Image (cartoon, rainbow, N blue to C red; front, top):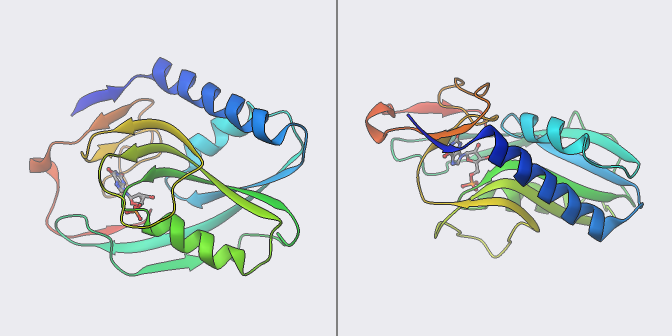
Length: 180
Ligand code: XMP
């Protein structure tokens, strides 16, 4: 495992994201919706840097991943989300890889008729985007490597690392159940 982003870099990055979000929304109330489970650490750090009135909701996106970690079928659970109709929604996710997760969550959420939907991600992988959607706020652009820590997991481990680290491909198992 090799450190990619230190605790200090992550703190600075989250502070930068909070300033960009504040610049755009001002004091308008927003509903922040974290995509479980990987967004939890970013969500907790980000909301404490925001001063406008906020509500927090959660959705669960789960996909089955194969040996090369390409995305499989995605199921999205909105049971933990209260009414967002007419509200300004800011989706929070850990990483934008191919973009299918964020695109599908955005598309299904838009059926609930919020006033607007924007998205913030901590990390964006280079040259991986397969959808037209781009996140509105990006903490860090990173190379196309598998990363763990600061909420990101490998087989549900390493989410509690305070930094972001790359995981050696040799350590990646053949088939895993990914729980976003
Ligand atoms: P897509 O391809 O839909 O993927 O943008 C987004 C979801 O895939 C997971 N993902 C990762 N998880 N390290 C992880 O721990 C990674 O390098 C990685 N790349 C993608 C993650 O759940 C994300 O929400």
